[in-house]
Image 1 (tube, rainbow, N blue to C red):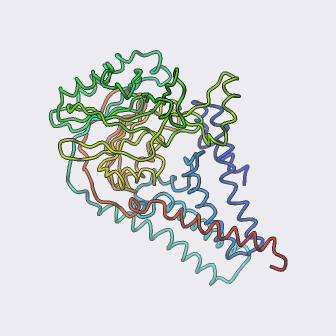
Image 2 (cartoon, rainbow, N blue to C red):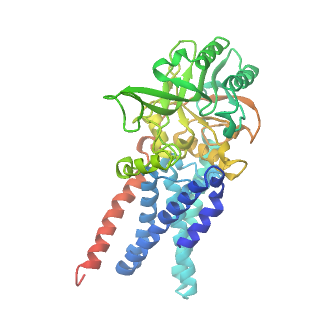
Image 3 (tube, rainbow, N blue to C red):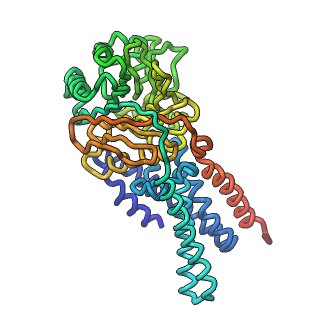
Amino acid sequence: PALAFLVFNILTTWWVKNASFAGLLVALAVNTFMMTLPFWLFTLTHRKLGDRIGYFSFVVFWIAMEYFYLNAEISWTWLNLGNGFAYDIRLVQWYEYTGVLGGTLWVLLVNLLLFFIFRNIRNRSEKKTWYNRIALASTLIIVPIIYSVVRFGTYKEYENPYEIVVVQPNIDPYMKFNDVPVGEQLEIYFRIADSLATPQTDYIVAPETFVNDNIWLHNIKANKSIQALQNFSWSYPGAEQVLGITCYGLYNKDERTATAQHLRDDLYYDSFNTGIQIDTTGQIPYYHKSQLVVGVEKMPYPKLLGFLRKIMLNLGGTFRSHGEQEYRDTFRNPRDGTRVAPVICYESIFGEYVTEYIKEAGANFIFVITNDGWWGDTPGYKQHNSFSSLRAIENRRSVARSANTGISCFINQKGEVLDSLGWWERGGIKASLNSNSKLTFYTRHGDYLGRIAGILFLLILAYTIFRLFIPGK
């Protein structure tokens, strides 16, 4: 199976090479290993414990692998099986109960039943046996689909509309940090926002790392770009601006974090990929992206890999990570208390992670701010965009998505894309989205299927090892 999974990974995520060829190689190696591991363990268990426990263990091992992968330091969960329905939202409205791991369970069970049917027919088993399995497989396929289609047709959003403007500046990500002046980028933003915003506009949303202007958190209001954004707020005093910045935090020696870098004397600093909210109140709440991209924004397992620090520095490289925060946070609207979740780029892939913005921090909307241009015009940015529909269904939250080079869009609580701006287009879109405060079953309980699978994984593996090494068992 390793070769098959390697080919599968290459065909589906080859576009990672446009951002980092080394990153692609690591992703291929790690993902192929993680997908092959459940098969190896299943083979071991099946040989020792037989069909019944063996095939049950395969389902458990795979779901446990996906759950572990979702929560590991090195995580590339793009190809989790449940994500495969991101373009077929009418079939998976029940994700509000199970999340994406429910889709994975569905795929595994249906495929196992089809395998059993094929094996029964090939072995010329009694027709009654494979008739029963055909009926079971048909039920397992049809019932969730019927429920989902009915739920899609009958789900009604509570009418509580907010007018939202999404800006897509379309600045080449390989040029925006060094070659395009910050003032020019802001001018693009102001021009687009001003063309769409009205006195009734509640939010204006711009992409991840939109402002990259040597911003220090302890003195953020003194930054000229921040001041320009605050001045723009007075043109639309009823609107909250939500956008991404790159910024820095300053510490003394005693306050420094595990990711802090030495600046001078006893001073240390962290860099952050951050979302902020700007309005006329003068307050600037911020949230630091904390689900970081391994190898680009984060060095995994720093305690275990710390010995590489001097080697990397001697070779002229870096050994560092962005700073992050331990909890999810939201931005509160000072007029009515509405809260938005500033989900930054890669974070939108992780279902249970996004629930924390809602369950713990009270988000009524999900705003995804991202910069997908690193991959070029490939399937990557399209796939990433589709995952936002799954987050909308899981949490029944409307989504406003601002992507630097596309796709920017509005998504309703059923996961439908209401309006969008495509790849490499400069402009903006405006829509009214409904706020929601109710919690779904999945929002309250997260990836419970993964936790159950994790417990069963340990029990089955322990029993398999016991049977392997205890004589006579």
